[in-house]
View 1 (spheres, rainbow, N blue to C red):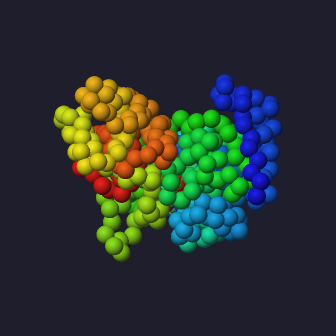
View 2: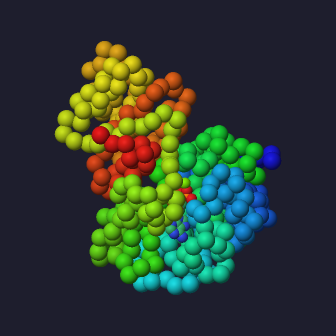
View 3: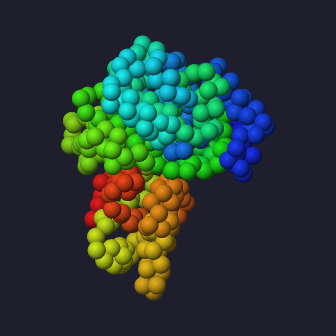
Length: 360
Ligand code: TXA
Ligand code: MG
């Protein structure tokens, strides 16, 4: 398959959709409406979209990603009214979350209607729904006139894609269109809340945080077990995707949990790895990088992802950094850990998975 690459030049420069951009979005929307596959930007990560109502299209999405077909897809809508045809029941809590946090980086799991086939939901009777805030994503969904099933636009197991260049790396020749709207703002996937029980449950932490949800709901939602730690054999996570290896760069990742004197601890661990003859690379904050650079005679490769005080910048650059390590000649990646409040929770969740829960 020949992939058409459409770049939204004006949107990338100005943040506004020009008539020239709109024509390209319309072209991509037509592809979606006709059952094709389009990689497109959202505020979280790029999505690999197709018509969520069509079993054949869902099968092609799984194929393009190389993803096991029991791992359900998120269905994207352009406005809140799009929820009604997908959900057989919308609870009071679910309505509150929709009103407070949509459009935005939040996905809600609800009981599905017959409109969405089991091929799209990995056999489940529930469906995950998200209304993104990204202008291009919403215009694309609106113009296509269909609910858009879209997993993250990466090959299965790899870090999610946060630029069109990442999408080209993973999906060139596997999708009909790659729509380039520049880098994603947030950089980690949406928060997922299961709204099918008496109380909301967090299935994946994201930029709509537990603290934010608590304010909306009037109680602090629990996290599913698969968010907190590795499951034992036979245990099933509520979000089937959480059981698969994720975000994995080629080299193994060792995640250094934060504690007082944290930079010293990272230095000690890196030095120990290097003393064993291992080529080490560090993914860390600007502050940690400055410390390591001035405290090593023979510093390891260091990849910075932003200031510790700016969680958004850390999230924004995390997946790019993980991807970029693949081109370095290294044996181990040592990653700096951060405190797990607010957006830090989502960042640490992705880091722990990238590390295969290998923490120190
Ligand atoms: O930010 C995002 O959510 C991005 C952009 C493209 O919107 N999408 C995304 O999709 O991250 P994906 O497929 O990579 O992750 C979807 C996660 C998986 O872990 C899956 O198991 C879970 O959502 N999920 C989907 N439908 C579900 C359902 N009905 N019940 C429980 N979990 C579900
Ligand atoms: Mg994904």
